[in-house]
Image 1 (cartoon, rainbow, N blue to C red):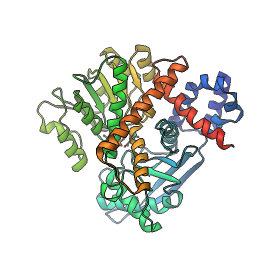
Image 2: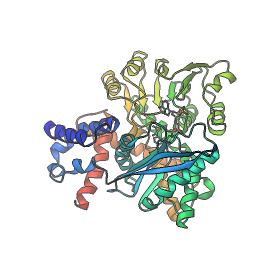
Image 3: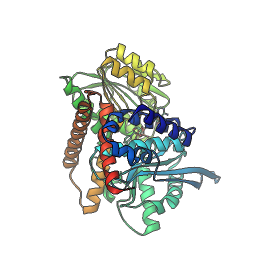
Image 4: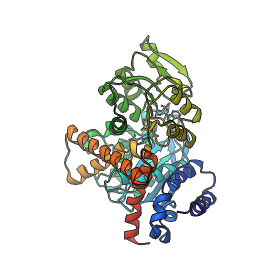
Length: 445
Ligand code: NDP
């Protein structure tokens, strides 16, 4: 792609999607990365593959009315962006967080296309959610919201059409309520959602998959530098699903994880995070990470999570949310001789931060490759549902491990073959893009 072509596409995307900075950030990164591919593949330009890719196939926005425990009517906004189905049914999570808007869902859906392609499982890209804030809500309020959300969403999804899953604010409890309502309305018991409970169609190892997959991917990054996890100091942001299981696997492999956070603040425990305490606080009691410090004298709690990247570490795993790791944080990590950064969250590092990592020669694993283990295992859940079988934990985990190894190899090789050895951002974007572009070319306009 000549840069004038890239500029034309980007300025058209900006004009057509005003006030969606995260979406534009995600599009810019992909378009800039695939320039060398486009230069070699004129048919991609002729068939307007890039222009078609940046336009979602379908965008749904709907009203979600529900009643709180005080008896008051509440109104939220629901979203589902069905971005691209060239490789399979739309697939991607649902996010429940007050910051959700169309631009956030579009950025996540756009990233999901390439991530899902990298897994080499047959799934397209989509994403959804709502500006509903689950924090502090009762189980009844969560159920009421989920039922109302599904009462509209059900008509747009299906096991061969669009298969949502969890994301921020959507775990096993929410998936259960959503699934129950879908089943009631449609009178079908199908694999229409992933991340389901184990006794009604869920897959073993799905809960662990994003975090474990992140660590498997990072293992390859470390191996490339002739090292491993043993004895390494690790800082993780977030304390949700991805963070908890990344910590579990990193500890299992001999690392010392010293910090984690939630949106209120962070914990620094130089003796190593006690994961059982974190699991109880976050998964059972749905409490705040601050409570950890009250139970462990070695730990210190700091209000506000901005400084977490100032803690010296060998490996940093941002696992909370988008743009949480800025240039100044990347500079701190560099100054403290951090050797590897891998993204558990979606787009947690700003473009300026990524540049610092690349310039400093820090191994950097971008989200769409490093955190693809969750959706890959969701595809394995879909496969098990279709066969009406359940695989043992070890089998799913082994397949996940193979998929993450394969994603690393694809990214590494794609970067190398375009003269960008070691640049896994370019590698992930190129490998994912080529898979989708070739399918779109084969399927016509
Ligand atoms: P959870 O809801 O389980 O946990 C999210 C964690 O991040 C919580 O600790 C939360 O803190 C923190 N967090 C959320 N928003 C913010 C914010 N604005 N500022 C600071 N901290 C914040 O979500 P997941 O663990 O599932 O998701 C985390 C990230 O991983 C997201 O970017 C998601 O898109 C990505 N991801 C998730 C996958 C999955 O399988 N679940 C798959 C691939 C990517 P608090 O509790 O205070 O809100």
